[in-house]
Image 1 (cartoon, rainbow, N blue to C red):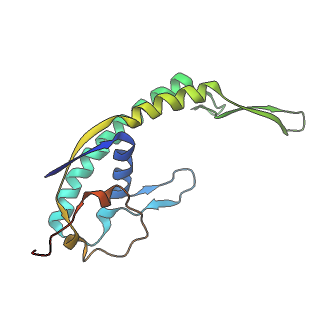
Image 2: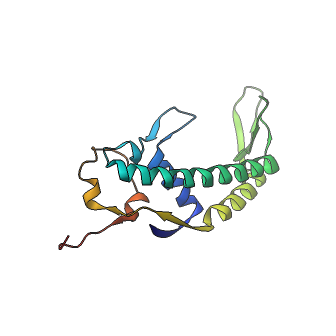
Image 3: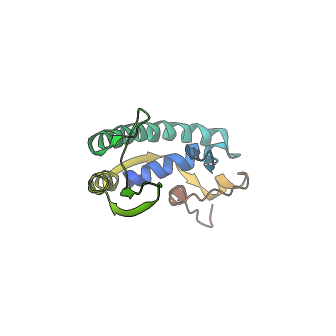
Length: 156
């Protein structure tokens, strides 16, 4: 196993790159998921173990984000809590006449950003460029995952 130190925001990114991610608001697939590529069964097994570790981190981070939303948010009128980015003044016809940043959002963003900038050491399987030869074509942009790929020497 190899090790890398990532910021928690990068941990979330890597989890999405490996497992796939769909935007819940739009339904658009952002990442198909690297683990769904044509990889050796051994690499898929090792990536599944990494995936479980990353998913636990995501659950912890999401729980802390939800605490911040409760702390800084307000009732959305539909039974949920949201943190509005802007305070808006609306006239009688429903037109926005002025908009200012919501102080609560700025505090939420500051605390959440601090959380995402914390670092965590992650163990991951050795991934060689040769492991990717059979992987299918993908439009996914694996920014963090590509940092894990070991460059092989010409002697190999």
